[in-house]
Amino acid sequence: QVQLVESGGGLVQPGGSLRLSCAASGIIFRVNTMNWYRQAPGKQREFVAQITPSGRTNYADSLKGRFTISRDNAKSTVYLQMDSLKPEDTAVYYCHAPVYTDSWGQGTQVTVSS
Image (cartoon, rainbow, N blue to C red; front, side, top):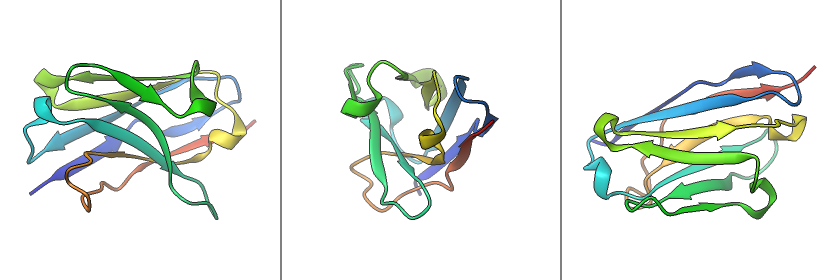
């Protein structure tokens, strides 16, 4: 079965950085596009970033320049480097493989606060 395990979240001050990881199993990782989403309290889940098998990346327009997605196929892991964090980035962050529509991990909490 598909398993996605997010990690790396925590409490960080505004302007700080975090690097999130998502380890995938049950899929052939190298042939899968991988996405990051986030969901803040009281808000709908929103798209954050995407990386294709070839390494092409896409970002939500509002996040371009601050967030960077990458992948390590040898480790079946996708990363999200988050810089210049703002309080409005506070959310639970999830990774997702689009072809496995209903397979989600537990998410990792990111809290940006002074």
